[in-house]
Image (tube, rainbow over all chains, first blue to last red; front, side):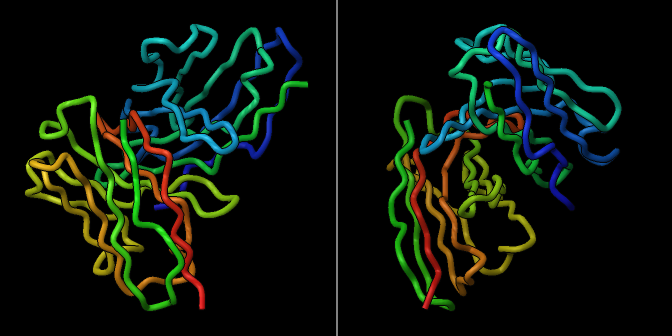
Length: 109
Length: 115
């Protein structure tokens, strides 16, 4: 199975909102609500920020939200802050394996 | 907390064994996975193992070459990598897997396959 599709880059100014998409198929994103999002700062391990489409682990600001429609999941970062500049990866359960997206580099202008 | 070790430089066709020491949670009750990231590339799930070690799952590209195992008495996870290829070059993370999400992650150990 192929990786999930994410835009390679996204950007926004401080205080704005940015949405990153993650497109899969009816065999992964479209079939299961086990979509997660990870934030990765340079040189750091990935950090879980959204799980099961729209749930936030404790400690993750509510500026981060997730949703899904059909075969596409989305991560929205509201009230952009400088520290949000990072790479973001989506993942989805796909029946017998877990697929990741190619990653989106979010730049805070 | 998860701490990986065992990475290094290995020639194509060679072998390497990665280890991951876990602490701060009940390791015996958790699914564990290895996830890798090639230089400048995205994340790729590699393998996972049931809490009791009775079943393992692999991405197609490593089936027959890699073996995931665990020692619950030592709170440790392993990845035996054989017949290594250049395309296996990556930073290898261990991670606790709960309902197909990964949290937490270790800091990773770098595997370089090159002659």
